[in-house]
Image (cartoon, rainbow, N blue to C red; front, side, top):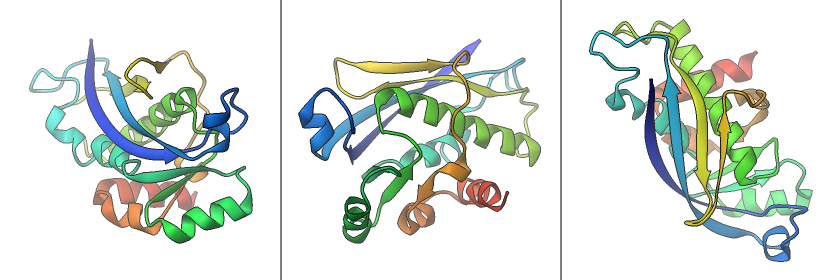
Length: 185
């Protein structure tokens, strides 16, 4: 059994080393559509994998951190990074080039960290099973998307991502706590 939840974000990035010069040489925006797919080994007491209402303060809050923000790659030049950090309150420093393919794996991996921490912190209170994100589909445009699935290797962790102060204070207490746990490791 699989459930799917859809999100929309507005963000800006540049994709270094892309064949398209427009993408590789210019910061530009996207209206991204993110589909999150969850699986579990059994249904909870209500007959659900994960209550759609529970998404808001967990997975929804995480994805909202990427909305109306600039996505920087740690390998961008220091002048570029300084500029965007100086003139934007909402930015995220990524451990990877912000391609649709990398976003899929990044979101899947971070969502799985969230779900694992929720399970370990006993925040699953309705008999949820081993809930996990089996994949993410990231629509960068209306005509193109990339998709990760559970066979893709885990590449990213919260400890590898830097969030601006503004994105951190605007996320839910649950996500803020999980990020702080990951940074302390």
